[in-house]
Length: 540
Image (tube, rainbow, N blue to C red; front, side, top):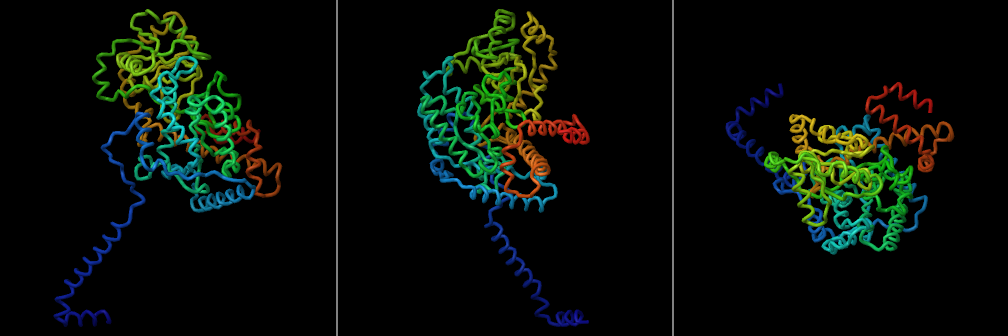
């Protein structure tokens, strides 16, 4: 009745009746204006700005470095240097991490898998190290890279080697870039250690090895070792959640045994045993990253123009004599030299050498990729970005991003024993059908993007894929920690004291960690059923 009374009164008032629609419209328009103003003044945290989508990414290390060093923000830096480390500081960090992890576990019934499956970014704390470990070394390279007379003992120009192994620069410069300028959204930098999933160590080990005097380099290595291992976060986990780029096999060699628990970023696992001591590297812990290509990208347009000009069956240009596993190069040269359709050349330094290698690859169907001083070779990635089908002659070689990329679609794998049989390799290559060649060449054009480091880092580029691989390592690390703690607590420590967690992790036998990692990997690849894995673990 009250409603009817109000309605009747309103209709009986002609002034209110005629003005109500106008008044309501005016009020609504005013409210919408206020809302528009408020929302337009609030920056969106969900839709990051895209830094000039039409701009071409910079893939030259020298040009990118020049821009980075001369930009104003590159000179502003704080330091994470710590004074005296106490157990209390480590415990304080451990308590903060425990609190954060507990909140996430109770808030999300699928954590930690959900953090990856739902697209939540990986959170990385980037240490702000003193400039002598970072900026000073970059400036040293920048100020000396024109000195091409600086060579290694086997005649390789050191600055080119530094460029080949500059993965530490490309990852770091992306992580520390303003978020508004970044394109990768699967990893973000965090500024509180308790918020981090992982810790990145931005020490340029390759530059320091090649450009500093031997004793000066060793002294800097020792300082870097102490600086990192003094950090509460390192002491808390014994380095197991730290990422250490050591992409050249000689870099950090004198002290890296003290950081063997960290996740190492490597060119390969060196199955020969010449570069890494037993127990230092493993497929369960470390990651393989591609070399930085020495040649320019042959994109789809370039490939279509060069396809009809690829008249050479197999091409190789590089150092013909190498150490260790690379000795196979001399044997292959003896086998292939002078054969029809083959071009085998000794490599030379400088722009002329680069141009000769680039032109040779773009005129060839197959590119020989034998082992270098280590099982891997930069030539593999030069071939990929040149549209030349790599022929890998290197036994027991681990490749970057295996598990994400299927190399069978772009590479021919040949055992050393087969390749050295008289006439076998050329006969095999000639037997590959034209249809298969065309399919692999088309795949090379698609796959090239996965091996091009750039600034800004591109989605599906190597910087992106390394963090996807790290996500699996992180889940594996959390699983290992959980299982090992449970086993040791149940059998050796009846109390529930969480203060023993770091000590137990540090003393967990490596073979136990490795065994469980292998069981998880077998389950991940569906080689064993969950019941079989549980049985194997129960036996342990």
